[in-house]
Image (tube, rainbow over all chains, first blue to last red; front, top):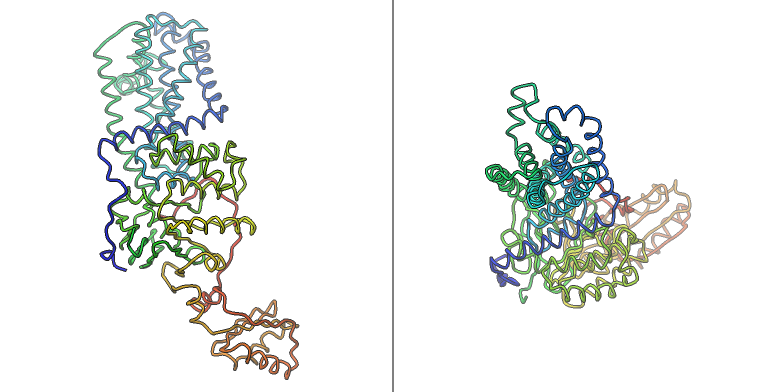
Length: 275
Length: 331
């Protein structure tokens, strides 16, 4: 019973770095498809997640729209819809927190971990599936927006704005994933997944122009935090203004969030699941 | 794999907070054989399996599977092992077929081959009829079979089954045994944990008994039994109130004090030679007019082995209802 007596057999395959790189994507795709099946087969999840933002859209337009439009100038719907798209995408990312903790509490995660698959794929499959789901909801909201009077100023820049919003959503799902991996408990995740989103969503330019905020410190925060930066950029793009500086800053935020939270989530996943 | 031992753990220690789950466990599973890890709930069986299958890091000790260092080359180990854990590791929303295809794909088996393999396994595990139904509609036995099928998708040379039949009804358990025996006849090395003595006896070539994180005995089922008294005499007295009296009377027949159950009037006596002692039992009890309701002579069971080592019986627990959420591990 000595390790030295056993020949250290050549492994089944000493795979190349390139191959591993490709497998990251292949594995992510397999896991993403599994998560999308879950949404497809429990349509009630998606239906309610879609109805909620549409209700927000209607409420804000018709209840607050009259009051707020004094400060926005022009049609509030054109101000609101791009913002509420960002809000929808932020809230949708809470699914990532909940979904991951549910996975962690089930046996399936042990199966994944005992397979020779990419370590990041379980997480990346989840974040990409949730991003696609977010995109689906946003498309429905644009349709609803068109019904009540929203118009893209220019389809090209409008779609660019949509792409930027989805990219931001993808970055945020990595924050949500990291939170889920720290919380671990599915019920706690229901709360923890949302709670940090409220200040970021409301102390931002999503619903109202930041210059109307009364406290200086709040206004300073709201003007500079990433949600406002991205929301402003998306709003400009959707209303026909292309401002390259703004786009670059938004992209830097997106890249920065991914660069910090993706490795953190992968690191945390390895620790959490090996307990 | 020509090495003699495919599964090796040396002096493995693992704590969860203050709890010592494994307290220096060493095992060696022979290539192509079935190693049975026998012990009660909480003995550390699952912890050891999780360490051997790369899911958990030990505090200290050395572990190798198929000659590969588990601690340093996890990914390589994962390519040659299969694991069917205690909690069935299947996706409830996917169908049986999709579950198998997904696992195949994650082993990087090309799609057409993955489809063929899934079909093959569904047939082998009698799941063809249910293949395209979501796994959440499956019965407990079907889930276990699907889980087992998923664990052998890539034809692993080393297979770990953690309590594969816990919670199954007896009929399903016997079907599982047949399936497991077939797997092993193809030459795979198997490590099987169980709290069922009968199961270790039926399936395992080699048995390691573990309790409270320590190996307390090992050998073949026969070797373990041979270390014990040759025979057992089980006596049931007609009046349970006389259990104590009867056990006092019989004390002279055995080196070990008899095991008794006063509610039922059971006495279990370990003796050198059953045939000689049985007459003596009758004579002694009859002289004091203690009535015997039942008298049996038998070979020692693994339960007796366990009892003689630990002084405690193995409690065969009934399956608890499965908790879906909040499976928290200590620490």
